[in-house]
Length: 449
Image (cartoon, rainbow, N blue to C red):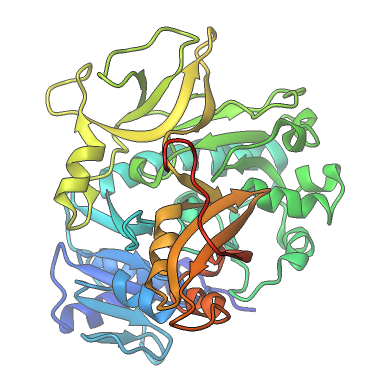
């Protein structure tokens, strides 16, 4: 275990910032952060901000090819690992704490870049501003860290998911801004120990987790012990089944949150009622500073109860996709109903308004899916499969919560036995199909698709 005081955190962040400035990092640059969940992780990210830069969090478990892609264009890398990064590297071991006056930046400058799955086979970087981050974390400080502490008597939060996944942003920053501690669970934590570790470290002011995490906890702790872990339990990352939420909803502590990475973590919340029913829990109403519009294909508003696409606006709308102007222009559009210059992010999520002002999530309009809270473009997996020399055609389906790959091989080239290993070398673990089915020919529907 380890403990880091606020004073030590500031000193370590100052050391990182000093090293970055000495390495030539300037205001507005991007800095990769490849650091284990340990005593230097917060300091590395904070140090990038102190230097006037944005951070790009990289999971130590990611394959080398993906890490290299994410670090493309980064001005430097802060790390505690061996790396082949082609540029200035700041190693946290041996850095001595030092005072550093943070560089002033504009609220609309870049705060961080989170990479999400891309349908072309290459992950796309979402560029989030300090304004968007501050809007969401400000809410989290008030309604999660402070309010949760008053409700349940606990303090702080816990980080047990990848920092390359923006779901953990409030877990990382909100407790510190409220003067509360952050519990860092190990990088190699076995999820079979999650309940035990959280009980030992808690109770917390709030916990934020995915429905998958909540399902794991349901097999390790009683509903009462789960709800006693925190004053507020936020469930986010994918659709929340009412049957799962219903085990804990009588406590009044369960909040369902929705929000794409492109909207700075969170867009809306729904406080789960005592009896949520058996369907999918609604995603609720907008958070402070956020706007939700349900529109048709021509960007006309649809009436209450009618189905449309969710467009997200407000302070949380990201700057766009890094170095992808065409994609940015297609997904970030002018808000025809907002002030001049305001924008909307078209989420691709199919929703409808209820009469009481709550939004219900109905599904996706494309082939994007959620796996254990991670957003995945099926096309990215298929693109990797099609790079294998023995694969002539590939399709991936989400079946029963598992990714199944269907592949057609070329007998002239060789066996398909190495396809799984091929994927493991190029994709994060959660994107590697659970099973591979070899087909002689890919079946088509009546339209030839």
